[in-house]
Length: 414
Image 1 (cartoon, one colour):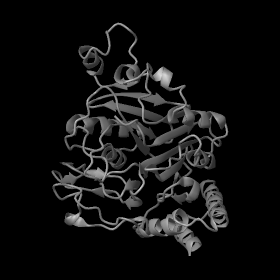
Image 2: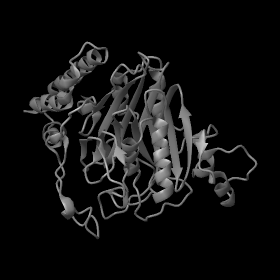
Image 3: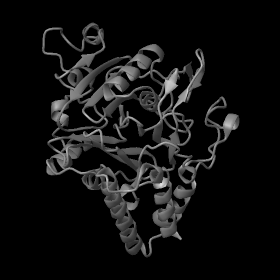
Image 4: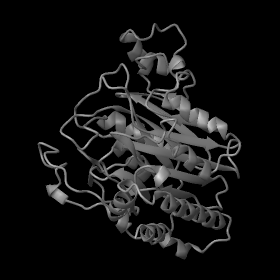
């Protein structure tokens, strides 16, 4: 079995942050040739009995969905990470353990991310949505646009304006930990130990019947369901440990800019390079003061150190994010045809194409351009601060905030 790989998700809560805010961040580490798009879907109401087609299976649609902004691999329905109009943010991770992975097509963990965002107004509400759907439909299916199978179970970090939840799964079984303050990160290993705030009712008994737990020792979810002893892993220099070190380095001073710096860090392995690399990144500001707007930054391009985090704020009348949305192939999409993935179409959106040509392919004149890019990112962060503190443009002017920032980035590449 190949070593676990792909993704890191972070959350920092007061008093670790500046300004009484919760800061959320995630790197999506995926195959290097995969395109990550940024898309917006407004909330909708549905008729009773309507069905919803997810990546592989059809499920019952909710009566109402919330507006969401998503960063997702462009071939699938769900999302690696995203936020909704209520300030709920979710990112997921691939995890492996003793519980066998079922190859049967079901809901992808990425489908569950989008479903949690579309159907819940709070972090714990999204937790309820995900565990309910997990119990009803299960998780499974190829997580890569390839005839080669790449499957895993999932963990999730879910945050809102007041708290965060970590949810880790092993097949149908799960454990959840509430985070009220400080800093937490998740990577590709189970991390919930003895602080279990909610759990699958049969989780402990199932572990006992499998011989993983004797029913007498204190129950440690990660130790029982993992291949390895997590207490040793957490000090072995892996990404999980390195990510927490970066959070701890900035404890008490964490801002959106700090989180962007953490996600851009290459020596730690957080910003991955190679066959699997960081193909998209997200940072969110969730003020605990409900009079302030939430703001979500997305790159929509690979390598956050060589990308621009662009702000998105939920307001009425947001239109399609055209230049970060990939082509749509409808019923002829190779994902929908069986056998699946016989061909792979060009899914690059306009921003991805320009970034790939100018930033990822050329070796000359990079320093000057990268400086301009990061200066633009800094300017946009400053503008967001003015908006959140009430000194920025009114709500009607925010409908084009993300779109205009994408245009500014495209102008730099010309």
